Image 1 (tube, rainbow, N blue to C red):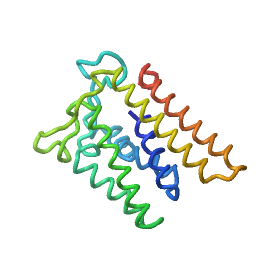
Image 2: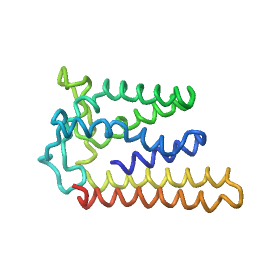
Image 3: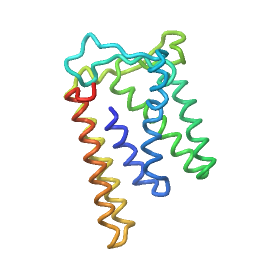
Image 4: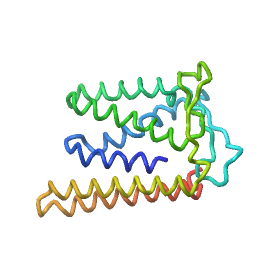
Length: 192
């Protein structure tokens, strides 16, 4: 669901023009960025889902630290605090909330593989499992990408002068191409 995460970051950029777009993109994927070294070291794992009907959402992700509710809150707070120290309190709060949005968006699509506590202590996990229905999941993700790109484009053009509108158009177009491309890669299993 990386495309949906980036679509959300673009939508936030439309409302928070002083926060750099790259930092919003990093924020929305922050939990996955921290997941990578834990996955490579075997601390967090991925296994095929028995009920998968295609490559999209075909895994159960045991990100028991980075994607636990408590872990996501802590990682998001750290991310927001570090960048807030550099760019001010408002930017830090926005970036912390955008980082946490990753967990909220994952909650909708993941199977019940998002634990409450780090290490899956207590065995309570969440997930609505929309990935079991790839077509519905892809439509929602595409809608997030389209809405985020459109909101970003509209806001960027509104503040850009006549000479800068081409840059706003290019940036929104690149966001759209990247979002749709990553969704297509997910649907086809290209990156799997």
